[in-house]
Picture (cartoon, helix red, strand yellow):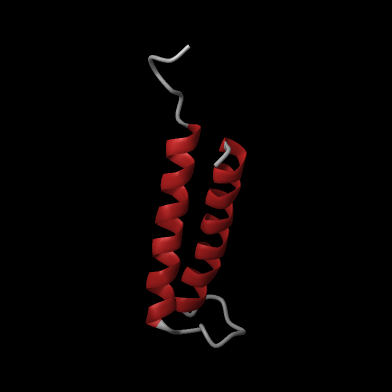
Amino acid sequence: MTRWLVVALGVVLVLIGAVWTLQGANLLGGSFMTGSRTWLVIGLVAVVVGVTLLLRTLRPRSGRR
């Protein structure tokens, strides 16, 4: 995958994961996910995966020129 595609995927995962986390924690209402512990966990996993993708992709590469 090209670098910009991985960055875009990471950003999307962080944003969607944040919404799912807030809905699962009953802080953001309006859907069937509100107050569901399952969506809280799924959201947290999505945020962690998204942040990991961003950090690995945007980290300066040492040793390469």
